[in-house]
Length: 333
Ligand code: ACO
Image (cartoon, rainbow, N blue to C red; front, side):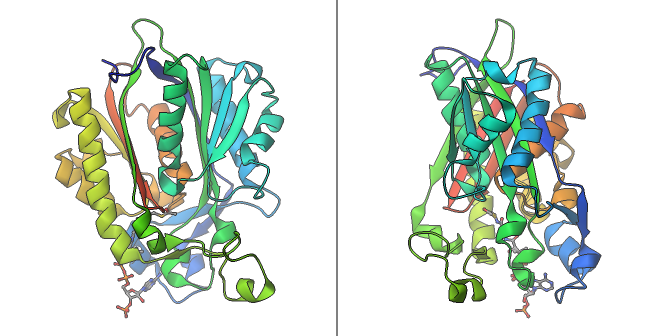
């Protein structure tokens, strides 16, 4: 079953992901700021995260994840028609990181641009690409969530630096052939009244980079964690419920839920409220922390490659992030 306005069904033909080699453990972090492995694990579920090298940019991670997704989809880069990168840590303010990725992949037939929707970005990209394919504008798309959050982390602030990590995930979308799966329903939302809860205040036109601003860490992520936590649970639950209802599914039909990987307590609260058993919820947060737009994309690839679902299974992706933004998708694989 397709969304009512869709003309052409769209499937996920391949997924890929990449994380940097360097593993930053909670114990190592505890040597830098006043924290403990026990506090981080109990409050967040995170045990370690990956940190990109100084010369490894968001575009490099994105291109590596993309190559893996293209390989699985059996498509070559020159045949890709659209590249959308979701990121809040672009290589440079301009041009878009998608332009660098187009160049690195040799995907010169593709229109390429970035979107900024923080942790919801990959699912925003999925919805945009799906619409552009189902309307006939493109026949395929490469969507990527990629972040180098270590470049916007205040490594002196224990309340945020324990949360974030680097990485990238990608998916190739294309028109479905008869008998193939499809993205059945999707949902997105934004509440700019809550923008102040989670932001990087400096580095843009409102607060250009100066040495004083950098000394005040204004180029790094600030978050009111408790407020974000409560809203995250409610918005993700509502978004997931909407796509499940629109798809005509019941919670017991869902083989795998892939939520944004920010906090284990948030994930467990959502599973509980959706009445989906914990063993059907995919979690890799302990290995990577919160990689913002990359999180759902990396988790989708790991779930796919580890056999957490198979062709024909019903899965739900759901995310939440700065903006505030939220999004969900129901996919028949
Ligand atoms: N180690 C030890 N103690 C700490 C640490 C730390 N790393 N960080 C904070 N604390 C202390 C605080 O100072 C506070 O101490 P106090 O009671 O003496 O004042 C105490 O621990 C409790 O702090 P809280 O912030 O209230 O802890 P909470 O249980 O709310 O957990 C957390 C914080 C993990 C950030 C949680 O609120 C959370 O996960 N929020 C949601 C984050 C999220 O989902 N973000 C989504 C999007 S991210 C994006 O878009 C990029």
